[in-house]
Amino acid sequence: MAENKFERYSRQMLFPGIGEEGQEKLNNARVLIVGVGALGTVLANHLVRAGVGFVRIVDRDYVEKSNLQRQMLFDEEDVKSALPKAVAAKQRLEKVNSAVEIEAIVTDVNVTNIEEMMESIDLVFDGTDNFSTRFLLNDSCFKKGIPFVYGGAVSARGMSALFIPEETPCLRCFIQPGDGNGQTCDTIGVISPVVDIVSSFQVVEGLKYLVGQKDKLRNTLKTFDLWNNYDYEMKMTKKKETCPVCQHGEFPALEAQATDAVTTLCGRETVQIARNQRMDLAVWATRLEKAATVKKTPFLLQVQLIEGERLVIFPDGRILVQGTEDLIRAKSLYSKYIGD
Figure (cartoon, rainbow, N blue to C red):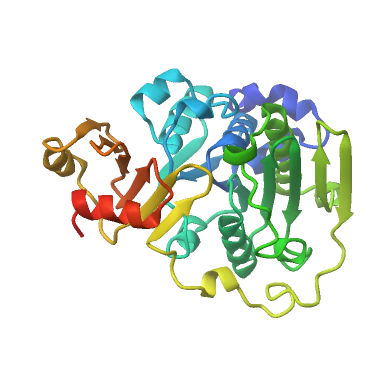
């Protein structure tokens, strides 16, 4: 082993739980982070700095000013450039640790591509902000036998757990579809420290797993409220008898129909419309500039409509209609400007 290969990790390797052998395991590890917002930026930052050899980050969104309060890898220049979050995160992290291979993918993770995203991955980290995607990750991980590090943060509350197929219960054993109260960072807010703490809990459990110290795993679903000084841990010892995943080997999120083409992004006054074909940004910029104010970046197209709403067009065929949650209104604007 070349001495300078791990020089940057010298303090980490002095920690008995990792050492030289553990650092080599981290160097050979491959992880997937789905969602590079509040949780995902902290996850990616810690994992890249820790020397995890391959980090795949996936996010469908771009950087906005309201992200800067808690999404640690972004700055005002990213907002001005309307960079996709995955791209901005990759650019920042490559300056932090050029020895780590970072793959950034700008797309919506859904039933049609999730298994491809998990190809050759050792551990999946949840950086998302909605339970539909979390259940998709849970079901996919348990189908493929890949551990899933769950995390959630809203207001001053946080939750985290590491779910391991064949060894622990899964997310569905604790939370059922529809159990959520609809509260999101966009509707009731969030303070930055809770994001950092949840993500740090996720990373610590992930590091334990990756270096092979499974006897040190917490094996609980941890919940806390920083503002109201609440902390609780639920032991992950018993699988729910009615759980379709753990007990019956069924994967409802994967067996469902493909994601609806039109969906409302909760709390954001945004409707997402997914086309079945890619979109050439240069072509669409030319088409739309006579009818709207168009700003083109290498990664997306922002189109300010005379009606007041805004379209954000991505090369993978997704269009965000911003400024409305009315599906009929969004479809009408889509048809007017996109035409199919």
